Picture 1 (tube, rainbow, N blue to C red):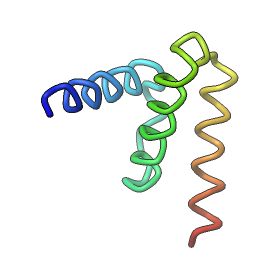
Picture 2: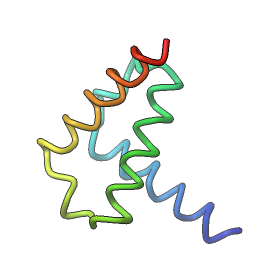
Picture 3: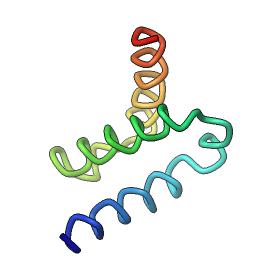
Picture 4: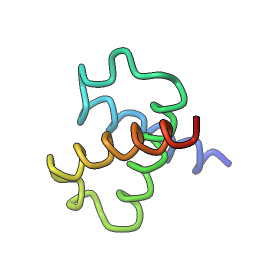
Amino acid sequence: MAFLDDDHAYVDQLVVEYYGDRLTGLAPARLAALHALFGEVMWHEGIEALTPQRLNTLLDFTEEELSHAA
């Protein structure tokens, strides 16, 4: 279980590092979705896949998905 906690903490740290001030003001649901997508990409495709363009795409995708869910 500690391994999973460490993985989540690592993803959380990287999300903050990669997105910085762009996280300010995001709704908790969108932030959680962003963390989940970021982690999926990182673990399945490698950290190299998290290019600036991909980061923007993930951010846009979470906004679109949550607006469709509402």
